[in-house]
Amino acid sequence: MIATNLDRNAPQQPDPQELAAIAKELRADVLKMLNLAGSGHPGGSLGMADVFTTLWFGGHMHVDPSKPDWADRDRFVLSNGHICPILYAILARQGYFARDELWTLRQLGSSLQGHPDFHFTKGVDCCTGSLGNGVSVGLGMAMAARVQGRDYRVYVGSSDGESQEGQVWEMATAAAHHKVDNLTLMVDWNGIQIDGYTKDVMDVRDLATKFEAFGWHAQTVDGHDIGALNDALNTAKTVQGRPQVLLCRTVLGKPISFMENQPKYHGVAPSDEELAAALVELGAS
Ligand SMILES: Cc1ncc(C[n+]2csc(CCOP(=O)(O)OP(=O)(O)O)c2C)c(N)n1
Image (cartoon, rainbow, N blue to C red; front, side):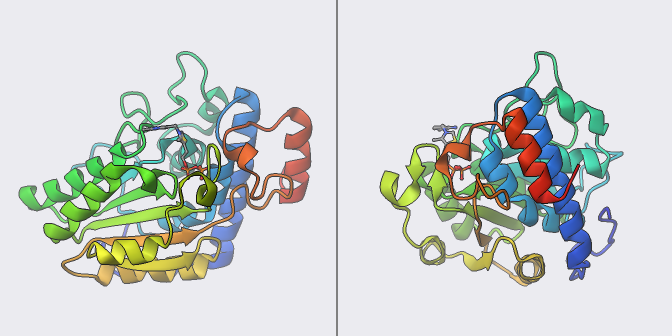
């Protein structure tokens, strides 16, 4: 299902089972891409699959894949750019490019690099990978809509590890000060980052309380409950005068048993044996 609603603030009511089936196929694509590449980041890509599936296939993104440069399109910035395999799988399924391109991930000359780059990949709105940067660009895009008199929305993917960056909180301050309400941040709050558990590396504490203190409309949501995620996205669109954040409680690596909650799989691609076992667990081929 591709978003074609003319009223971009209309509530969406997608079928959660249909979206769960899509998320399963996207997860299988992620695992295959990373196995072929031999490197990359499976943990967050799998963990955010339900969140981003709800956004992109639940009718919330107002886009036209045949016109990636359409000025009024909704924007999506993946500020935690390392989990781009899930974005690439989504963009292929949306029709921005052929699915076969997925199997070239991270190869020299591929349009799908290890971090998103709008120079190479249709559907990518911002180069990301340096944590902290994309959230600020997303705010700039949201403010540009106001200057240009456009009504597009900007969705930004972020993470608890990225929340350790001071730049996130500069962005949060500015967004609330300027009452930017066409900006929705979606944070992968899985409690894990590159070096281990976030609470051990540098505890970010209660992100919902922090964003609320900065003046944001904050919702904490089960990042694997598609119905709840859809409700939260619908609610975010009703908020006026404040930026919104969805703090998505996710499980890194879900639903692969040997990857779930294992910091190692932040950034280790599945071997051939692991891929086979993971696809069996997924019930995918
Ligand atoms: C400015 C910057 N510093 C360091 C890094 C290296 N880095 C890549 S991913 C990562 C951890 C990010 O945490 P999180 O997104 O929570 O990890 P995940 O949940 O995907 O495991 C770090 C520090 C970076 N990409 N950018």
